[in-house]
Length: 548
Image 1 (cartoon, rainbow, N blue to C red):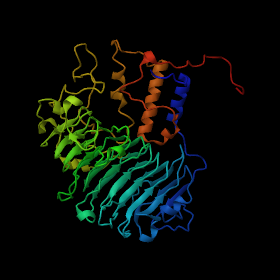
Image 2: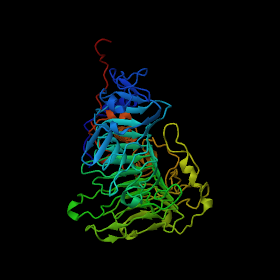
Image 3: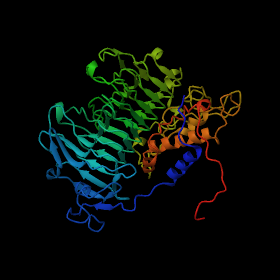
Image 4: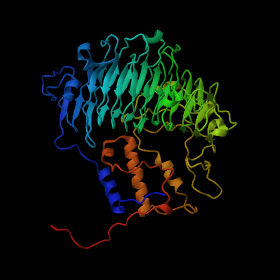
């Protein structure tokens, strides 16, 4: 049973109006500038900018913004902010913002700052180009190239290393280096939004085969919850596109694309080459495993022509959720390989939930899956239909490289979009498990538009795909389950809850002003109205306030 809300209907409506009205930056917030022709002895104004982000950090306070002007910033070894143990933290952002007052490091509008780390080669140290241990930070529009590896044994360098919480990494580009694009091991509620990691390869360490160079890595320690990757692309990374091995908390990947990983740009075979490597704990002993084992979510994602598997469970103990994903021309499209509790014995995947996934053109459309031990319904590989090129508008993979939309969202394209009259008509399911047809059922109910596979048209900065979940979850008009409460306290509460969750998942600044003790809302499973209660709003009064 859902606990009684401590907020009245009026309070909830006021919260929505306040959030949607927005909050401007505090009046005393400052703006600083960094430019290639700047000087750290200057004041940091647009006319007299600083030369480095590192120096700008000394001046900022919560709510302040640092605009980085366009141009190429050639980083030199003397600029390494901190050398500690085995790491060289080059640009070190360790000053935190606060709720509602992020510290912003943004590319200047319509300009592209490029940070080149090719000259930074500290002997025997792992390079962290941007080392972010502060929280409530927003990095946007920066480009990082040329990050180096100097160690010949097992190692890794990183373009953006996150150890903070409530950070937003947006429209970042990490490419043509020897390092992982973006890597997070500590911190909660970070959003990695509309970022690209590509053409990264390590020819130096462990024989130069390119291992440990993923596009994106998220391996949170215990307590580091709520980390989400949304609208990101990874291609031509020598190892994997997205990787969350050894994660002690759940990670979410949504609306992300992984393609051509495990290959060089000349399509020479490199390291592992999985699109999404989701879960697993390697050879970790049982007494060092997290309790409980987290369950990861991969939804609305695309994996194309990766050397090994498109979507890979990676020996994960237990299952994960795989919803509305599309896999095309990978070594194996969906590989659900699991491992028993001993973390030694490999078995076919168990405990997984697979819904509305599309798989086409692979030596294995789905493999290592124990269907009797999983919830597997509504996927293209559940039927005897053999898809052909005629089922798609286009199978031209190069469209994945298209330019992003003006807001940073994923490119518009025809690739892998289902053509009219495709073979999958009437094969989808909604997320509540009820079969849905494209023509409606005999009762004449309005049909739902269920997207089979990933929704390749949605912008990366969307809120939540609630519109295709919320209404069907509360029933159709005339249904015994229909609640007819859209304008009651219950309906207002559910809608407000949905809006609050959407703002948080989108990572917009307004989300920092939400009531913090409100749980996440699942639009496919709203609260039961029969078990819901909310204090009524105060009655109306004609008493006028003082001063009227």
